[in-house]
Length: 429
Image 1 (cartoon, rainbow, N blue to C red):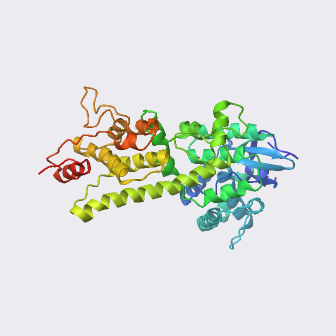
Image 2: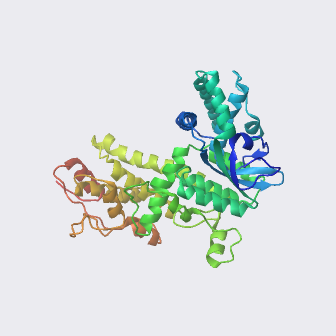
Image 3: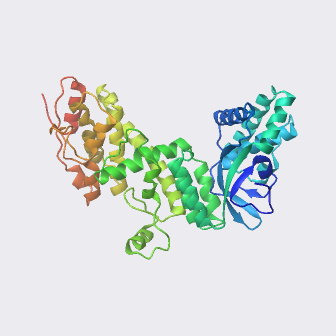
């Protein structure tokens, strides 16, 4: 489709598309994160078109734009567009010095990670194309003009833009669930010029892996286990795009009774309860990232007592994971970290290690919700103690501290047996 005064839905040759110079990357977009591998894949795709003497065109994906006055906000596809612009600009300029393309220069990148990745990928392009002959470079230029296309979808309002954004990414693998949540809650902030930059800055200062771990290993499992539902998914991560509905929150203007109750409760967060959509999501993530590290440290300190006092280390990775999840859920409910409570949750988590020769994700999934270990009715010592559901039902810390637990002696693990018996107040001569 040839370039017009304004873009419309359709297919555009790359060369035509980049004649338009009024694109913006909106505040809610994640940083530019394409790696060297992504760039090699893109260059490989383009080289493949050069080797074909076919009149057919090659489409490099789709982008979603929202028209705002004379400008176009890139709702989806900024990673690919920035990468293509780096390549397009270098081929045209062939400047040995690093210079930002006009399109990228017009898009403000506040993230240090974005700037570093842009510079790194531009240098990679320069190194790769240095070996191209003049004839091959001309073929690449011609491909931009004649063969390489992108599909453009233009919308006029924000709601339609985000509906398309959500549906596009639900089918693909480009964004992680927490990236989709970030975009969703920035949209819910309705253009707040003060809070939005603050929320984006707070989010970008966090390590992406830490946010992923928070949702996948703590917030979502605790929520599911509290509802006595399983978490483990054999062929995917435990927390996927299908699960983000649990973290979309309540509209700040909700007319419903449950919504008004949530609004009134803010900014007090609970893992098992909703929150107000928008800035409170970013506050919640920041709060639980801090709390997760604090609880993990408390669990480590408790375990280390046994190494120091008895020269015995009861460490078991999956039991320890249950211990941390249980203690986080308990603290989230009562803001209590008494020795009795920590000890009780430790016994509950580690007694499973005495019951089982090997622990796996399915085992802890069943144990957390109080299911027997197998369909024939074989049980753990503390089957029927769905700790997370009991914490949710408890009215005071004593309701958890007084839960009776059993210790099944294991001759193959005498040290752990002895530690748990002592923690449980059992005396053995």
